Length: 242
Image: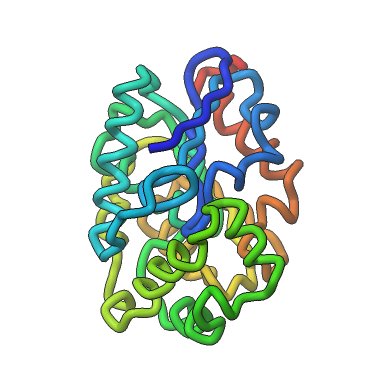
């Protein structure tokens, strides 16, 4: 697993990239957004500068949760604040549900908590990665290297498979005990509002910020708001310090 770390004070912040992303996804935020805290970002197995020989199946998130838990233990970074975009947010929520002792807070952006017809239809409409717009292809090439189409294609194949619509982690959400912040776009075809709404239903105390945009990157649409909300969350968890 490829890991990048920016030094700072504890507790650590851990930044989890989106589905076909990498640590590069956080380049414009880190280390400043961590507010002086230690910041760790890593490429999930199969992506970025980690090994690309991973077989991506419906067990993906369970495997990612174990990898994250192991990384926190290995680096002495627990308990930590977790920040996850899209698939990374799913991993963060699942770790908080299964191992609450290692998670101080969770912030998720454009997250997925179950299969939905809208997301699947959007990805099918986009077609395979070698048919995606050139700017997206350039970003994927930067993230994953010359085999970017294979890396993204394996992810795309899973998310457009018939069985994926039945996938759900909604039942696991009730086990989350730490504070949760959600940023979600109102018009995102890759993560419709139903995902944030499901979190609100399972965790009535979650803080939710809606962004009036169609992008799958609402934190990039309103970066100052995103960072401000993050740091307010962390200050509350840390008792007003930081």
